[in-house]
Length: 113
Ligand code: AMP
Ligand code: ZN
Image (cartoon, protein in one colour):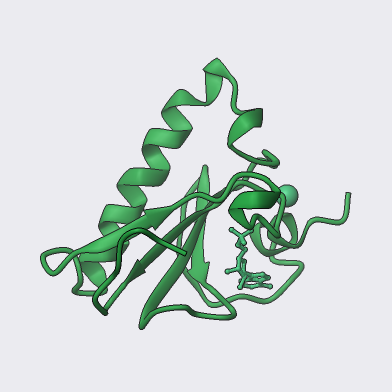
């Protein structure tokens, strides 16, 4: 399978990695949409939110905790930040390996585009 995020997780493709453990990797988005734009992914290939299984519950909780950790490290936790998961075409999903966008460092607007 030719998945760019699997390659980043296995270090077969380059990325600015900020955090890694047994389950997840977090790295800088290559095309940032805010001063802070980090992607948090499971190491395991899951194509998107709809492919989650019961056994992934802990993994998903872990992704959110890692997002908190990075928001704090980046100094945006108190100001505020946004976590985004795009699922399938109309949401704008372009990479079919589950990821959470951590966005912050500027005022966010609602509704999103
Ligand atoms: P999505 O549209 O939710 O699927 O988001 C995919 C994100 O991955 C986009 O924000 C891209 O800029 C980002 N992206 C794609 N390829 C890479 C890469 N090689 N390294 C870092 N970020 C990437
Ligand atoms: Zn993958």
